[in-house]
Image 1 (cartoon, rainbow, N blue to C red):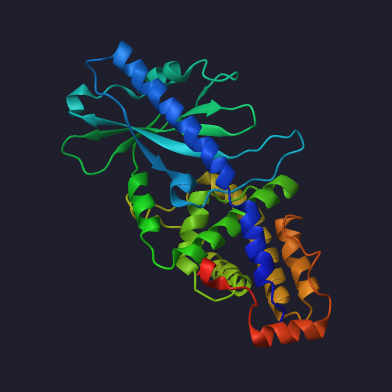
Image 2 (tube, rainbow, N blue to C red):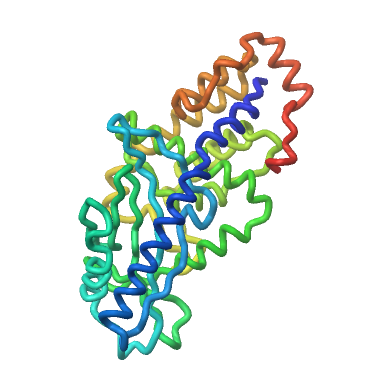
Length: 323
């Protein structure tokens, strides 16, 4: 049985976005101050904005993306803007969007976008920061998202953040989420397949993850489990408020389902072949088919007996750092 645990750990180091995190954090703080100051200067008697981090940045699953042919790096951050107060002082959805759009206008060389779920600020290197807007009544437990086409939507990303960050044994789980997202990034970039969001990948990984001392086996098992479950019932239920919302529901995923499931089946089959292989280099190449060249196989032995010896001895890497 081939062992590519060390190649997975090296791949994780490549796709973990530590340098990007610092850029995003700096840009986020500048934007927050700009929005605060805009409200203080223009609407000092209205409910003032506060902020809460959310998404992959907050959960430490942020992906270092594939650099595109034009040199851009399409990574992003979600930073929630919250207005907390008496519902009698709640403004219209369009008013909130218009104010935030005006607050960040001219911040970068590219005009900000007023999208249905959020205001988006674009940066020169290709990354962007999404600014979803929420309102919470004084007596309410959960916020509502100001969505321009769907109205006020029940949504509480703060709960999702707490749910994921509270899970035990989450170091390997975070790596598996990154592997799923890296596969999605490569699949979309090379084949144009519309892949699930990071939120969906995170839920599926958490639901079907089984711990293993080796990342290659844990990831193979995860792909198999997800494929079996989605073949049985194509759904992804949100574990937090609004609980049991199916993130695969709707016409969008009715159109995308077949291409995604085909990509998942192909990857699952190659993952099983990789683990069952007696040659670690051949196995590594099977993983590389779905991750791209960032999953490096150049230093992997091409001798079957080496693979057998490695499998019986276990991974040589000191995995305490990654437990």
